[in-house]
Amino acid sequence: MINVESSMDERNCWRKKVTRKTIGWLLRCSRANNSYSESVGSGRSEMGSEAKVLSLEEVSKHATKEDCWLVISGKVYDITPFLDDHPGGDEVLVLATRKDATEEFEDVGHSQNARDMLKDYYVGDIDVNTLPQKGQYYKPPSASGSKQASAAGSSNNTILMLLLPIIIMLLAYALYFYAKKDA
Image (cartoon, rainbow, N blue to C red; front, side):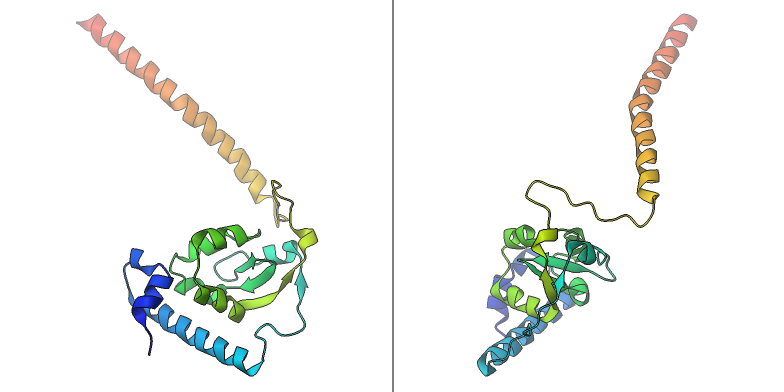
């Protein structure tokens, strides 16, 4: 039997409207917690003995809603199957890709059940030498020059946004001057 009240309190779900999706998520959390407890009791490890070591460049290739990997506490997780069930929405998870998401994960204050659920999505360990140092930005390799084209387009938009109010002010002044001349 699931104690829904404590489960919802642990996951901070009182802030969200309880939906069918949320209830399904709570049931899966409970099942995952029970299966984890059983595996710990039997001496099995959820993550296995041989961990695959992945670079941040490799992990960064998985940064879409169809294929989403996160780096949390030095471990890599393929959380794609969980995107639809995440109480905070899938966009939050996709935005946390291509970097070490440990700080974001800890800041939210996830419950122990959420931490235990990560074991189901474990892929391997991150090569810490590929992570950027604090204060540095990791720029993932670009597949095409489309970002450069969009950067040029954004500068055109910036110029337009600066000139548009000036043009409107000049037109308003011209109309005022013309109207005053006729009167």
